[in-house]
Length: 109
Image 1 (cartoon, rainbow, N blue to C red):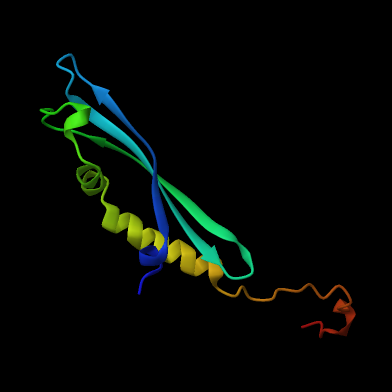
Image 2: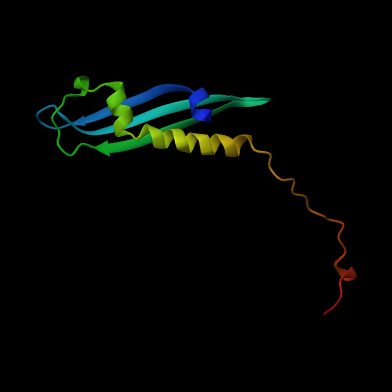
């Protein structure tokens, strides 16, 4: 199962830009994914996308949430969330500086 399937999803905003006929010519949508991380604060990512409507024929209230998610390419957001979450929970390699290293112990050539 994908991480995005387990995430809580919520609309942050959907802001239409309208033409003189009151039809939407562009949407700016923000959509939030939240998923718990064991031993850490929840992982939260907000996607933000602008989409221009090539043939404006609908008022903002004529759209559905499902239509907006389709316009915003939700499958891509799901995929990106899965990748970002997997990276977030992955064990990071241990990196250390050896400040006691003595360069004089190396060969000259």
